[in-house]
Length: 73
Image (cartoon, rainbow, N blue to C red; front, side, top):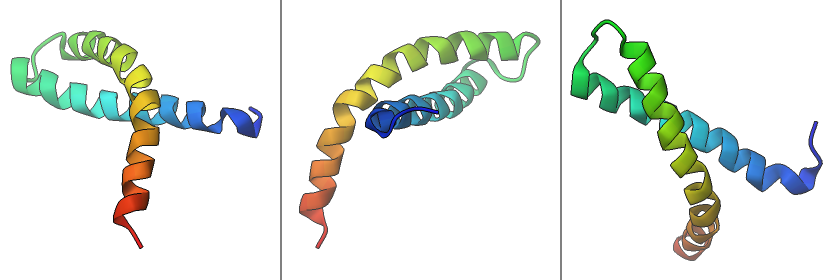
């Protein structure tokens, strides 16, 4: 278990992992189709995209929270 102070980083880690997994799967499928070696190609793309997505979400999440706070009552 992690202390509560790590919740935003853990949230970003999990969300970025799931989103990059789904998006990279769709992008890989559209690019190469369901060919032999698809899973390996997809996993390679996923690791690369997760490496970008995780720091990006840590930066973007606070901005998104502020925007949501301004747009809601």
